[in-house]
Length: 86
Image (cartoon, rainbow, N blue to C red; front, side, top):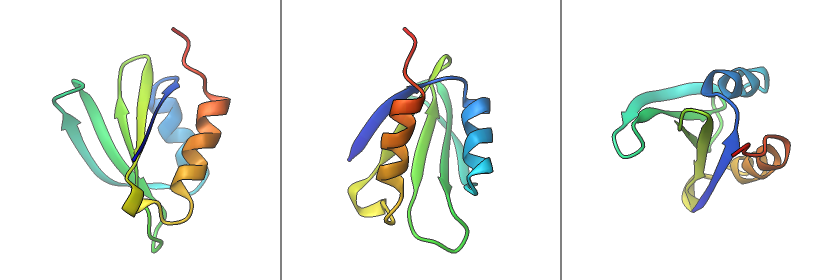
């Protein structure tokens, strides 16, 4: 499993991911992190990117069996372009 924290608000990150063609497939509340939690992916394509709102940052997760050939690369890119400002 890959877990990375990236900077920025969940609203801005959701917007960026939507611009890339990802859609929200599930939205819940993550009790452990006290924030909204989403499962995102491409329509009709395997793979899931999990995102949890941490307030001033977002936690991104990709389970090893849910990469779909794109999710890990996307998270690695976002970790470079959206550093955590703490």
